[in-house]
Length: 112
Image (tube, rainbow, N blue to C red; front, side, top):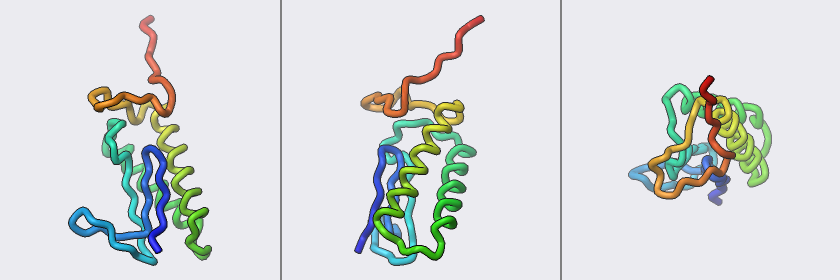
């Protein structure tokens, strides 16, 4: 059975991808970061998300892959993305079709 966890910026599936299609898998997780391109992703920040994903998956090693555990990983990753936004490591994509400050208003540095 295909399990999934979807938050605004993190989609996780128990599946593999081939030709942009998902195929159910019992031993593979697929991560889709910010599928709507709401944020601007410098490569180092995106790699941090993948590393955090790997660490979270490793922390659940040996436990049953349940809907609850998958949603916990997705939720933890969503919080991680929020922390990157707050640190200024990612930013909102102001060219997005509908700007939605879902993780809080952007921080503006005051001129001194």
